[in-house]
Image 1 (cartoon, rainbow, N blue to C red):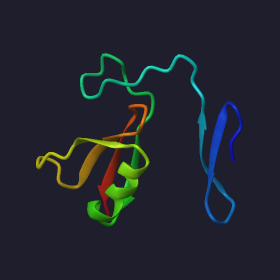
Image 2 (image 1 turned 90 degrees about the vertical axis):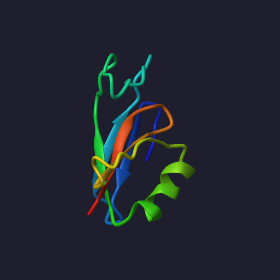
Image 3 (image 1 turned 120 degrees about the vertical axis):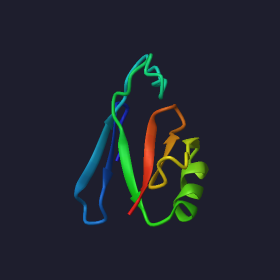
Image 4 (image 1 turned 135 degrees about the vertical axis):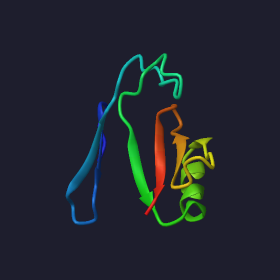
Length: 89
């Protein structure tokens, strides 16, 4: 469900679960140095990285951090640079 300023996501049941508002003059955060701070962060639970990563990459996302220091999550950026994590269930 979209208009010029909003995008809404719904569950199959029809319940709205996330809404995003367009930000004019958007500047992507510069994680991890935070000279441009995060505005929001989303963690997405997945059963495996191997199953979930192709969807991220097909949608234009890119991997930012898959350090062995934190094996239960990986950090990605969406196509305009907002970081998010895939977190193992």
